[in-house]
Length: 228
Image (cartoon, rainbow, N blue to C red):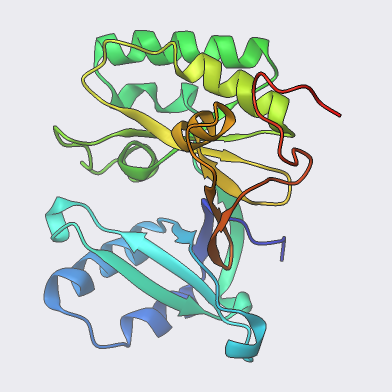
């Protein structure tokens, strides 16, 4: 089994779905999960319990059901052998079909600009689930949620600069910068922190979240400061 990461998709085995469906669920959730099992749709890796609190080694997963089944988030726990494979949410380019013509044009330009800087955005949230499942998730207030793998602070700054150039859309472009150690920061918060507008960052990782005053490889440096 590969190392677990946030935003990672996993496919459940037939035995795993049998275990899930044997539990007692409300009717909308049971129907939604039955659809997931019948169609072989993926689930997503969620926040994991520390090893001491999870001696069985079960993996925490989730399913975000669309409006058809009450727009509910369902938490699951499965054994590693009840998962067959792991994959990623689609790239931004592969998800353009879920967006309006104006949004597609802006997002295609963003994807091209990111690629020119050796960066790639992947979707998650409503756009991600709609692309993966073919089911209707987007509504008037849905964001375009993106996550970008960045190797260091400089790369994160480059990504933020490109994201800030996206304007005039009815949907907010939101999301996270994900560093090599798996820690993730909302890109808008990163920008505010780098500009000195806030002292601490909310950093999310596989086992939870925490407030930090510095990031690995970027100790106490901000835009405009001189590196020592």
